[in-house]
Image (cartoon, rainbow, N blue to C red; front, side):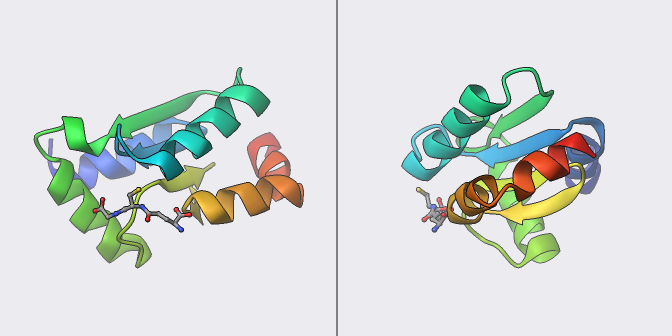
Length: 101
Ligand SMILES: N[C@@H](CCC(=O)N[C@@H](CS)C(=O)NCC(=O)O)C(=O)O
């Protein structure tokens, strides 16, 4: 599958999509937040460091979102951003609202 299709289908087919790296502490914090607060919400986690196409996916995401770092998180097809943005969106209630859409 082309990189663009892989990324776009992941975003389209899951309520929450987290582009992550397995060793990344910010990614761990975001994954823990979704596991704890939204355990029943369909969530796709792609560990880019464990995928052959990981670097290409990261490059495509940078082009698509302007964000080069992981985690790079989407909720209901909307780009949220990294861990800082995700934690802030949780605290102010936006994350719950977006998930419920
Ligand atoms: N403030 C960012 C920090 C993200 C960050 O620094 N991520 C590191 C990994 S822990 C990263 O993406 N480094 C570049 C890379 O791995 O290519 C956030 O909240 O998401």
